[in-house]
View (spheres, rainbow, N blue to C red):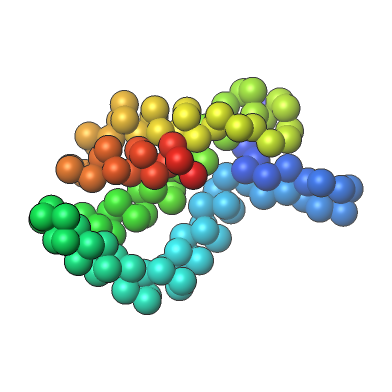
Length: 121
């Protein structure tokens, strides 16, 4: 049986909802166009320097991408998929997963910041 996880469920019979995969792909396109192409990663590097934190452009970009890619990971939970409506709390699951597996994401010193951004979204 092929199961598709939805990020957003249809609100009416005319809508089809949005899969987690579609949500990530569309969101990354938006992120790149609205933030990265406009220098947001560079801004974070400058902001970090203000707080006396050395942050490379690569680390900044990795943190931005990871924050977006994993922010709705908790929506793959059985509870959310069966409830088919809003699921406050999915951000806690998402942040927890990032903390547990973050060492594999090459986030370095940005791991806690990414987890916090996900938790607070």
